[in-house]
Length: 391
Image (tube, rainbow, N blue to C red):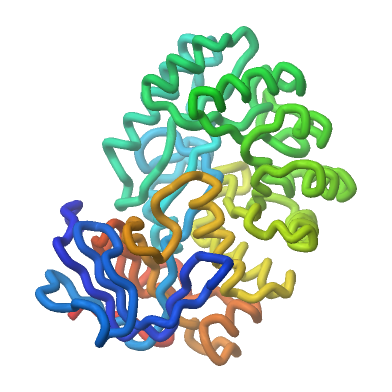
């Protein structure tokens, strides 16, 4: 597909429009108008300007959602992961509806530098590389340094001035004590760098246990994989984090499913559903999961007994707001990132939302990023009952 944004894109005959917004997850609209890669109009066909479109997509009564956001990935360079020696994994996630990824650290790079000069250089290089090259069109926000002992405030200032906006998981490097992490997280925040902390047992060599006390003291912006990556904290510590911390509660595919469900229920009981965001924590030792975000949505909706339209917000609007992104919501002015999907063929669900509530994955027929069709019928999801079509 071309990287050139269409001047005007119209999506018509939408049967279900999910907004990504917890306040109103389903919109009363059947048409989207996109101009120069951004949402220009949302409404009924008779109320919006659909004329002179460069591209018109007929959704044929199926569902449109904001592009899914994976809040926790570990890229390296390009569309390759040395962790599993796998090529084109990001493009494969595109086929699972993911249009944006957030790096939690480029930790799987062979020979990853751990000296301060080297880790800063790697962060800037990764940020530049993924800004300049988007695999499959997916937006990968990368360049997330893993902090090490000996770093000073000036290091964070330099990285921010160079375009680094993320910290890799605190705890994957040499900084594992709450007091030390708190100081570095504060320096990062001072210069506009968002932080994520590893939560739970060790994942890769060099990482270690990060318990609730360390997470609370460090006060990172995102409680990374609160359900463990892979080993979760005891449930009483997870409840403590949900109750005593105001930061994002990140639930991941490559974690403890029971702990993930518990974290979701606890956060919702507190009336803080907007804090819940989703990631895969992949590539990892358990592999690459192109449908990981969809699987999390189906799990949390079906076993967790939460309306599917609400859980879709966890993977779209919630993450966009927590991560300060311009996508993830169906709002005028936002980036035109969409997934067109329908219930899978032969599901027991009577419609898309019902099928997800029953635990089935939807079938994706089209993925659009910045108003450009990047993927037609998904090669990874089950086939959709009805497919959208470019007219």
